[in-house]
Image 1 (cartoon, rainbow, N blue to C red):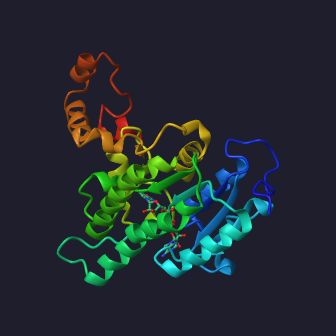
Image 2 (image 1 turned 60 degrees about the vertical axis):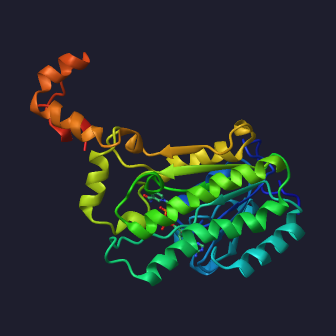
Length: 293
Ligand SMILES: NC(=O)c1ccc[n+]([C@@H]2O[C@H](COP(=O)([O-])OP(=O)(O)OC[C@H]3O[C@@H](n4cnc5c(N)ncnc54)[C@H](O)[C@@H]3O)[C@@H](O)[C@H]2O)c1
């Protein structure tokens, strides 16, 4: 098959064959759609059967998105996908290691089975993906792994956090080892993004994220997908080993937003004078007024 067969217009990733894992819903589905809309031939994969891909999220893109069932923790599944990719396209230009699982047990409560289940998907999955797909890549290819702000903080969900720190390390090593082959490897760290993964989290968790985010809102799947298109395109040809947060400033503020908000709430006029900005209106300078939450 011609890799560009599904592309109808010139785009930022035209003609590239790009594999996205965990693409049945959420961020992965948005990334697959965005890449297809920019001209890629997307192989969207997920552990769910094709018939169960939710809400037709991948529909409407013709041949530009092909769906293949794949459990990222299954090495035989990756081998079969690699064989199919080689026969179908000859080479692969991009891999987005997006599939992920969350589990919110705390340190003293986490069960070994859950710990291992999360590592299998969040850390082993990207390793198997890189091992299976990198041999199909040529110079100029790009791999992106989806970490999390949990990968750069002591986020309370210990199994999730530890598995994301592991995949962060994996991506750094991969950037080093695949660089001489001309393959770029970068990490993207989403903050709180509204997807099914966080839909069942406590409301207090969502609000606490908003309160800790300088931009004062949660993220959308498109916010991550736009960056993925850039990192898979040749526009980012000299970027490798980078970690880019898509989190509204959450990870940068390192807890000092609470300090800033508290001072502003206690003495809005003085604080505004000190920063040279106007005092917030309508809330007497409260933290919620400043964040827009
Ligand atoms: N939503 C957030 O707030 C947030 C924040 C930081 C990082 N992330 C990360 O972003 C990525 C995408 O998450 P999302 O928010 O879209 O979540 P989501 O739960 O909506 O989607 C995750 C997808 O991964 C798939 N998946 C699960 N196990 C799999 C397996 N064994 N093999 C293949 N696919 C599997 C699921 O079926 C699902 O389609 C994940 O790596 C997640 O850890 C999410």
